[in-house]
Length: 277
Image 1 (spheres, rainbow, N blue to C red):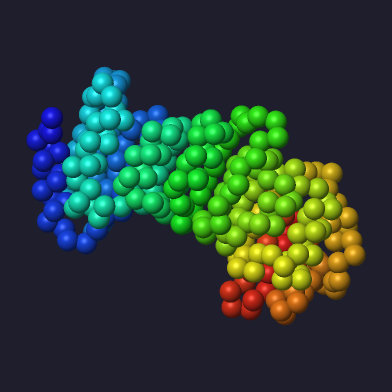
Image 2 (image 1 turned 45 degrees about the vertical axis):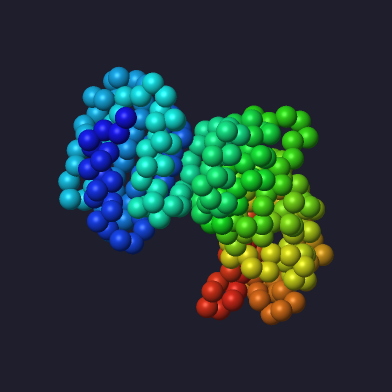
């Protein structure tokens, strides 16, 4: 049954002609966030009565409403289906702790792509099923602390930004295939030889032609000289200077910001690329 507050919200949305940005969160709390024109509305659904103790408010700048529900997911989906027409019929951001196939199928009925996706945990097969059916066009973030031995997950080419918090499953061959402009691989187990191969691939224009930034965690034992071995370079004040076959340059140096990492950045104006460790 549609509440009076929901009816008021739909009325407010319909008064504004251009589309909103819609965020669907299926995490600890189920929530739909609708933002646009300097306003943000949050509709939260929970089975926990104590959640209702949180303040519900509504102002010119938006509102926050908490709803007690026996089935938060079902009620949240029903509410979205009621207002999707005035919100632009598009979910822009999707957060989930477990992308169950039933949710993926429902999303696929709404649209074939989502701009930004964050997945935390979930079964390996469910994550694979999601990526096979939903195209991510912007940012894709993934945390999977538990996966089976020899787990493999093909990262799609469409995301422009990629952040993998648990990237132990990404080997050299998959690294070379990644197409995102910005890449961050944490908990990587890539070796010195593989990082050397990555630099060679970049220098010869064989991969990552559109790359703007990349960060790869390395271990304390990995040595910059071993990574740079047999790479044509010059030694300068900023470390090792290397050049790509199309003229773009890079500086490679040993550095530490928190945990040691390989950091590469393409400078837009000077077309110079930097690698930090």
